[in-house]
Length: 179
Image 1 (spheres, rainbow, N blue to C red):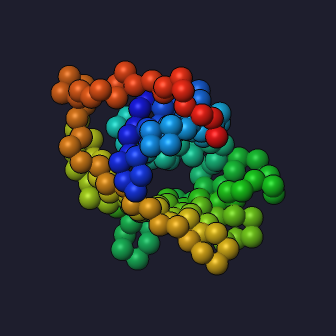
Image 2 (image 1 turned 90 degrees about the vertical axis):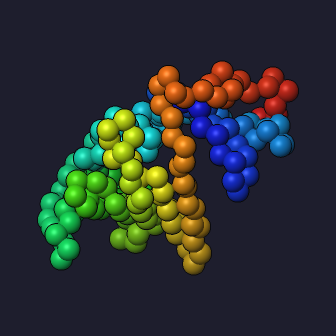
Image 3 (image 1 turned 180 degrees about the vertical axis):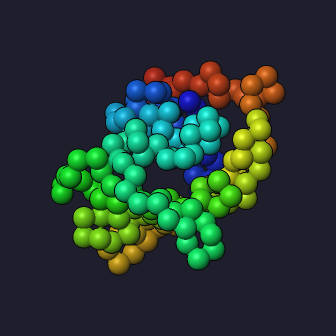
């Protein structure tokens, strides 16, 4: 899978289903490499929504089991998840996933101290290949007394024969320096 971001800075991300990921910065001609199943092209937001795998947002694949199911005051389905095995050293100890009319609208991740360290909001749904897809995602990462907010907006979504881009055959230049 090839993903190109143009803002706040241009990067091209290449990932495969094994989790081999390379992030290329064309302005600096540098590349960062990762290897982790969590970075697999099969565990991305795009894959979950376009393949109709939103009921657990990949939590089963990541070793979580559903722990609780309830409805909130606005009649939205709320599911809570925990690691399949009790690992006190695991960063994520609980996940809450909220649905509105069958679509995920919110997730948060809780650490071992019981604090939420990541929130993700999914909204502005539109149909892509007959599947609801959130064209806007806002993520908040909490780090001690600070936080980072990032917003991703998808537009002009094209699939299959309609999709054409010079990035489909993109390869990182051999002159790129590894960071």
